[in-house]
Amino acid sequence: MPFRPDVVVVVLDCVRAQDCPGGADPAPNLPVMQGLRHDSVVFPKAVAPAPWTIPSHFSITSGLYPWQHGVHAQNRLVPRAGLPSTVRDLRCSGYSTALFSANAFLGSDSAFDRDFELSTVATPRELLVRRAPHSRSKPKRRGSQGGRLLGSEIIGNPVGRILRRYPFLFDVVNRTYRQVRQLSGPPVVAPWIEPAFREWLRTVPRSQPLFGMVNFLDAHEPYMTDPESTRKLTDWFREARISQRAWRYLGDSRAESRSLSQLFRRLYQRTLSTLDHRVGNLIRALKEAGRWDSTLFVLTSDHGQALLEKGFLFHGTRLDEEIARVPLTVRFPSGSHGGSTAKGWASLVDILPTIHHAAGLAVPSSCEGRDLVDMLDREREDAVYSVGDGVFDLQSATRFLPRTTLDTLNTLSAAVYRNEFKVRFHRHPDTFEVYNLENDPGETNNLWPLEEPLVRAAGQEAQRVVEIMSHTDAGRRDRSVAARLASWGYH
Image (cartoon, rainbow, N blue to C red; front, side):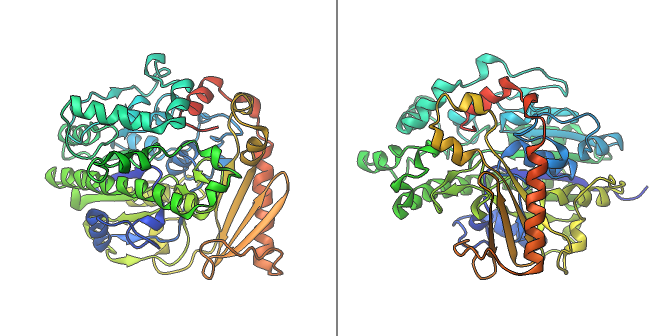
């Protein structure tokens, strides 16, 4: 029987490429991620297909872009029947498959978990009340055909809005909870993930290959202060009082404040050291189970995070580099190709064909991705894409967002990456942007109109993609899912 590797895909929700080892401005204290680079292939030009969780995750498992798999804000947030799935294909070929997700929207709401043999998904409240790394919290296990999240598990819109308007309340609740429970160590989201992952490894026969997918949510907003560095009341209040309602900064002069951006980045980067430690926990579990040498280990993110670098906070609609560019590190079995850095563009749609080739499975003919092994030492010939799908539920959003803010957010857009250029097209009003990312990685100098055939062709392609997105059936949107998304700050 041919060798079939174990496969583990770890998604660091909201983590952007520039803050990871090898990025433009990496965060300190990331020894696990730094060490992983030595026996892995690093893809420094990786692009997320969408600026938020659900469409990007379906791109990972289907090998298709959002306008092709149809799971996006202009359509419905559940997959169509017959959508390609690396999870289903691996399971049908004998793999044990499991999902461990701190992000609640990867459960039965979106049916993302439907093809997994084991699906263990957090509740939304776990994002808001964070525990110590070794807390004995109990995860919710959901079957592949699980029902809606229970209403008692949902943090409703009023609570979510209050916490974002008065973020110090979020901080006070968490600090009080930790003191009462006498918890130590950094606060984490869904601390049960590593023990559950370790238990799953123990139960799968060593002779059976496995596919595991993990989503860590620690870098997702809202952000907490660090008890160790904010012992004084004045230091704590300086950080805790900052509003984390992203839309409030649109068109606000405060969004231009470099000091405010640096404050958000400081809060954000503290979460990365926590994530680094948690990735190390997974690697140790694989080593202890005797599976590390045989594992294809993929470390990436579903999208990045804007921290007011361009006047925008967090993620969800825009395609700025802070949001579109994600880390992608692939450790092949036995460290094959280790220590190398790929040259060309990569996309999360490339993960499916890479897994299928490694597992000896046929790649679906509809797949848009490329085997990452084929791009180790050469430039990519085709383009990669990222699409912004606008406001998910316009009717609900009009109740709490100003019209001018809605007009800014509810814009379909597409970005096409080809050679050194990034070409963006925005709908309503129809506008183009083009940046030479080799010379202008911060996207400060719009070169449009640039009389360059490749750029013009990319602009036409971006416009075509937006046209496809705009003609999907928005009437099929699920209002119950919309309410849950709004409670987390998605609009």
